Image (cartoon, rainbow, N blue to C red; front, side, top):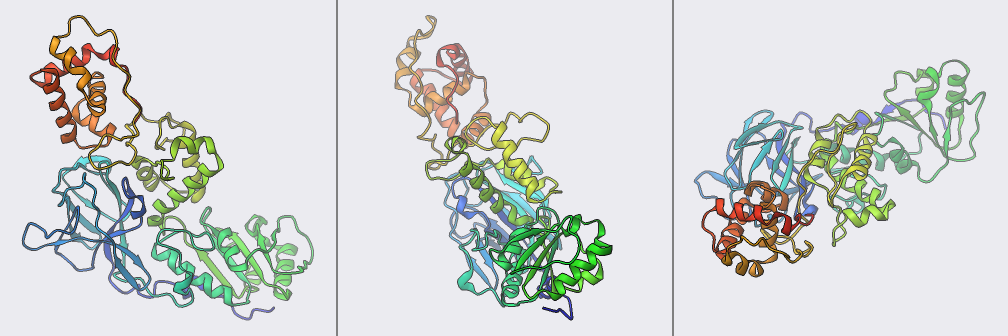
Amino acid sequence: MSNAVTEEVTDTFAARGARVQVGLGLVVAWCRDEPGRVGEILYVPPGDERVWVFGRSRSTPSRPGWVRADLFRQRPGALQTAAPLEMGRLSREQLTIQRMDERGLLVENVGKRPLFARGVETQQAVVRPGEVLALEGICVFLCVERPPLMTPLVHAAAASWPAFGEADRDGWIGESEASWRLRDAIAFLRKDSGHVLIHGAIGSGKGLVAKAIAGEVPVVDVEGIEGPLRWNGPVILDGLDALDGLDGLTGRALAKAVAQSKHRVIAVVEGGLEAIPLELRSAFRHTLEVPDLDQRRDDLPLLIGARVALALAEEPSLAARFVDDEGVPRIAPDFVEEVMRAPLDAGMHSVDAAIWRALAETGGAWIKWVKAGAPAPARAEPAPRAPPEAIPASTPEVPELVELPPQLEPSVVAGLPTLTRAERIVLQHLALNQTSREIAKTLFVSVRTVQNHRARICDKLGLRGNNRLLAVALQLKRYLGPPPPS
């Protein structure tokens, strides 16, 4: 199976709309109540200077000139409008989004939920591709560049496409433009019988791509081979980059074996093609570069979810801790944010290391970010998904109070049994001298919800003023016990 010409498939399937001006968008990277929205995008078309407003439902914006920002599912040749978010914690008008310049979005918080940019609470921020925004307890967004319409695919038929955000039949996950171009290249190479040389950065998924093209064929590690080679069928050659430049006998033998092979050869190389002799490289009809995670960083949130689910499937004891009643892993927003910000020198190996580090060192029921070589930071955990503004129904029962302090006022003694579970939990947090904002972050409800609970507690206990409530809560601390885990 001789190859007269080597074609770089990466160039063939490059963005054919590269000259088209790109727009900017905010991709959903984490969504507490609707995890299935990860991968959807708030999109601002190129050259559009209008003020877009994002929030709950699709109500008409309150100000003239504002345009309602919808979430979209963007795929090759299509931009499908997604359903609006209906979370009660999200204001009807939460964010305004406006193009600042060619590579920046001006985002302003006009709603009640706190906005964080670069980890700092703010009312206004300019975000650029690769940067992260977070609405406290609701959503995390990643700023990306995208064309208004992804180029339609030529070889990968729509019937073979996976459901949005899911793995395709080859196990590849991603909704980025780079992932879709790669799928089209794979579909093309499946139809062609020529040899293929696959290259790319560590942890980019080269082995997965090789199997997608070749199918279930033997994998041969070529390190240490000598002399001419023969194959009885199609093979995947691995380890070319470990052969010290492939010079001398080894390089010539491989080139001859590949060029004369009657069976298809798929070879995998770590990094670029500089170390591969031209003689060997020309034995392959096609070369294909697999995009690294920096080129498809907007796929990271989907990859994180899939890899966490895979890790938990291997460890049932961890799944019992970190999976909710609907079978969804509890991944805290800080984990997603930090992985997206972190350098990914080892590609998916870096992501997997972060996942297992978090699984091993995280306390509580949510998978939180743990920095390599450092103890896990003491951060509040999100509460399990629940109806808007509710203290989760799954929270364990609060134990009954016993041996109340004798100096308590009669109205307090009489009112304590009338407190609801939610009010008792808030009282336990107050006994730890926590502010309303700290309690809200811990329980993942709004500050106003906590304040409403405090007001009802005061009414039931016959207290006037927040300072009086705090004094009583501190008196009750040893009798209330610690609050249940969120």
